[in-house]
Length: 205
Picture 1: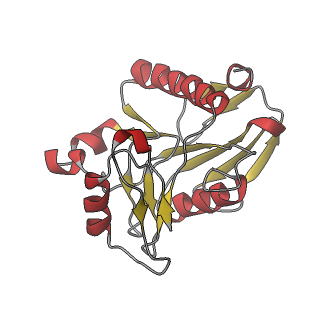
Picture 2: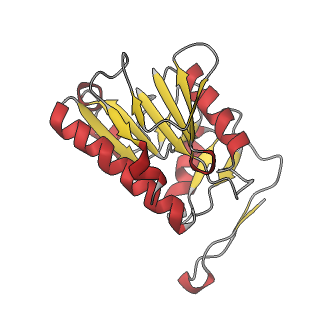
């Protein structure tokens, strides 16, 4: 597997044998030496390269983060993370949701070293924003696999946003996802009372 970086930066492509498996500690060292590459680690140790999103998806993600930040600041009990923040889940995988919420008290309980590295926890809320034109790691099929992994690792609520279909898959802590067709407002109750997403503001970007 080759991870291509920008040649103008002077950074060479990363090459990994297809059968290579890394521990979370080894993966962290690879990321530290290759900060321009956006990578994730599966539970079985495989490295996945995350290509940049298109500009439209990036704009939608910015609106998503704005709404989550507004909730977190008004509530005072949550911390928001965007797509470049990695979490080390209980199963050993290292993932970067497009957006996520962690309880502030849980974040503050981490040591300074844990905060600087991949935080060893699963967020309470995880959100993934599908890019339907991409059949790679940001495609719908693999995003569903990620949502199932979040669920297994303790996320209380997951939202998979499907802009092209104007649909949302809601993943609760247990059970199969619930699909909502063309919702205009998405509520997080009972898991996160008071949190709502104005989806028209995200779809219209």
